[in-house]
Image 1 (tube, one colour):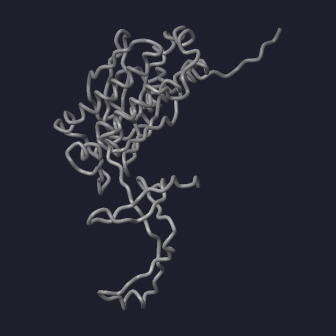
Image 2 (cartoon, rainbow, N blue to C red):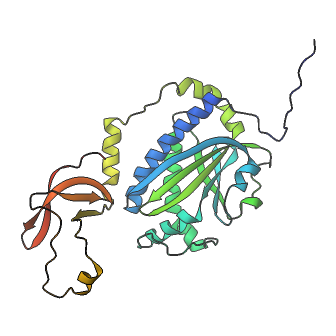
Image 3 (tube, one colour):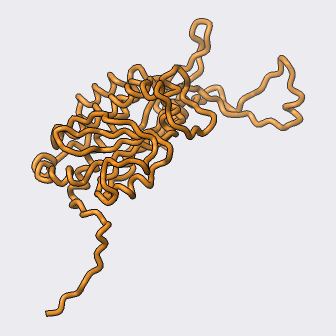
Length: 294
């Protein structure tokens, strides 16, 4: 009987089962949620962490996607032989460094250089938080002790894996205030395959909603974070002639009736409606209700 031949690319990594990739996706969604809480507490600013993608690539394909220079950390994975790779984009590293040194995190120009040894030591606290939350996320499958083994800056010079060796590539977006950047994790596929049975046994049903304990933990971690609140009166619209004629003592009438609620914004998003009142010798806003969903 004739059989149909199929083309095979020997450079293509041996595929991991789709259900296992889905489990890894869920695992790192949990990691992203936990990291958002931890970063908010550590940096005292609201942080949002979102899982962008989980896919299987060759090690060469993975490193070719990374910027250069960048911050690269080779990770030990005890008790397993082999190394994972953690990469943090410069667009995230330098604003975080600026925040850790007491600034707002706003970097006026794009910085494309290697970090110094001093900057590297300042980042150690951030790396400890990332690895702690990563280890906690993997505890649902197995106990992996992630540890820093070396720091690098050039993806193309890395030799921790063979060029065609398969890795599970995890891309994560991190937003802190007005700053956004990517973080990438590469885990050798061979280690993931070794854990297939544990994925099947221990990852049958994962929680999709936060428990009361999760809410309490998040509230405890996020309490020190800084949130910007604004009460806004919109208008009025002025012509250029009227603007040029303005002088001290002129009164500008807003387009707000006296009884209309004032919009109250949290980090630039409409959250409440209230009323402008006096509190001692200061102006204040009294919250009247939650704003209607857009």
